[in-house]
Length: 197
Image (cartoon, rainbow, N blue to C red; front, side):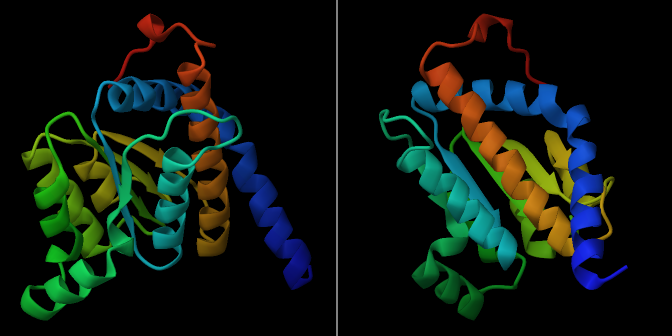
């Protein structure tokens, strides 16, 4: 098998497992809309490629996914470069996101933590701090269980040994989340039927 066919095969295999996540993604999209529409905000974090994914998610909510709608409050903490460099200079590495979560997060907000490994110490610390501050923590990870999934209220875990495959499937999950968010925004679902946790 060539590298390109191996990569595609890995992606196809991982996408085939998404059926198990679809009810959770739907529920999370509707719940996220309910919270943000009531004035809560979304905070998102990740390292490296997961940082780019977290920023992608917040951009879809502040801007739009497909249809024009009101903007919603969503902040990618891993894109706050001045805060990141100041915290990295003055505090232990684990505080990189956790300190920002404590500063910006309020009870009822949602923190989305993205990590392909689920073991990044600064991501896990952010999840743990968010729980202490009353936020709901949603993890998007690679194979679970892992430290991040144990710290989160809800987890979408991609079962693949390939980091690149996990990142690619994370983007699909984020787009599905945005699809369901917009469905709720435009009244295409019955929000009263959604249960969380």
